[in-house]
Amino acid sequence: MSIRGKAHIAGAYEHPDRKIPGKSIAQVHAEVALGALADAGLSLSDVDAYCCASDAPGFGPISMADYLGLRRLRYVDSTETGGSSYLVHVGHAAAAIAAGKCSIALITLAGLPRTQRMPRTSASALAPEAAFEQPFGPTTVSMYALAARRHMYEYGTTSAQLAAVKVAASRHARHNPNAMLRNPVTVEEVLDSPMISDPLHRLDCCVISDGGGALVVVSPEVARELSRQTVKVLGHGESPKLADNGRIDLTFTGAVWSGPRAFAEAGVEPGDIDYASIYDSFTITVLQTIEDLGFCEKGKGGAFAADGGLEAPHGRLPVNTDGGGLCNNHPVNRGGMTKVIEAVRQLRGEANGPVQVPDCEIALAHGNGGSLGSRSAAATLVLGREDS
Amino acid sequence: MSEHMRDHMSDHKDAEPLPAPAPAVNPETENFWAATAAGRLLLKRCLDCGSVIWYPRVICPDCSSLHTEWFEASGRGRVYSYTVNHRGEGAYTGRAPFVLAYVELDEGPRMLTNIVGAADAELAVEAPVEVVFHDTGEGSALPRFRLVNGRT
Image (cartoon, rainbow over all chains, first blue to last red; front, side, top):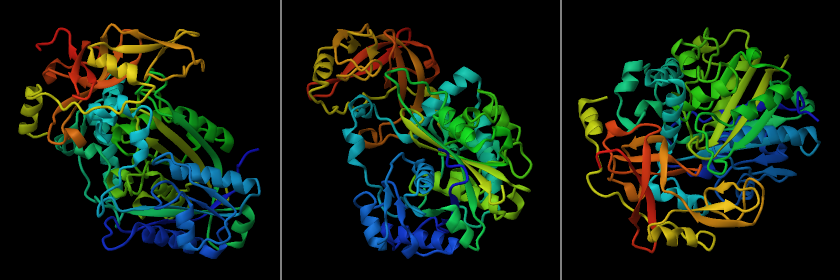
């Protein structure tokens, strides 16, 4: 069984704010839920499936379902794969819809890392690997720095090439009135920004933002009844990448597995993709991922970015036209939701004018959760315009 | 990069001993940590498929065997990757810069660790290293590494 064309994204909503004082996390989940449902022309009372990850406060999906008053639920999914969770949720919701388990799935993400302290999850302290890693002082940035260093060693990738990813994002973000960082930056400015964990500078890192987003995935039958243009889910792939019994390889991501699965299900190839949302927790994340998805030869991601390949509307592969996590938004340190939302905008022709890809018919959204420096989970979606 | 930062990086060589936070020890790993307190680095080997297992656990993740044994590693390896981290967190708050690294042991596994006593200019992928143990004060020691030919 394939999910190709058996589910549509009917609603997508990104919270417009990047700093949200005076509200609760549950409240922001509700705001984005209402936003996405209004975008679809639906209401909370229509929802029969709910997906969320550990950013949702409370007991799995149950607390937020109760808070929102989701009384018709017959399908829930609280799969937690970090920042890629929401792409996984789209794939799982599409599969559930294709199997007849539900017909209107709501997916929410929200959090307030800027105005509230991020709770440290006890799960990571209890992880079986924790005693062999945490005492050495790993941080999020330093683990990605290890991946960047090894990629440099094996492929000759340079800091200037990494910086080109940020430059492209910043040029896109200047057209996004809601972006957290709207000023274009140069390669030199990235290289002159403070070193956080060598070789990653501050401007190689994504923003930290309050906010969130939501999606509504529906059956083709429901989509036909809605007046709003929807987006077809054509393919989905997901894959954890393990540290693999001491054989960890820091030069590639789980996209080497999730990508081919999504392309095969969709019946397309990398060359068919008009626009791509690529997870950009750090600049190195984008470089490795575009290589692993087959948009360029392995090890050539740096040259691809430095040649302007990521820039809309005329680069070889316009990427993250909202400004991405590097400049626009990375709510709750989880970038997967906004990746799907910008792909939906592109396929509806609703991206910001100067970065709208002409005649955008097939788009890809990719997320990576966990850490490229240890264990991670990749998820890839191939999406199509309603008439694709 | 500011001139200040450049100077800071080129000069970096641990000014004071790194923190040595104690790991959480459980029945599956107590032999490993007890050995570190005695200055020995233990690894596990699968008695069925021969794989060296890292991190230590009762099951072989290569062949699912539950028949494993401890053996003492050479304590030698090479740097697989490294980073000079300028922003410590938790026990390392205010203790940066320090070096986080993966070391590939001669026995095969790549383990997360720290490189100590090295000037930044001496650090390199593939540089040979050897283990040193830093006492946590709680019956265990952290296996860290120093450059074999470094000016330590």
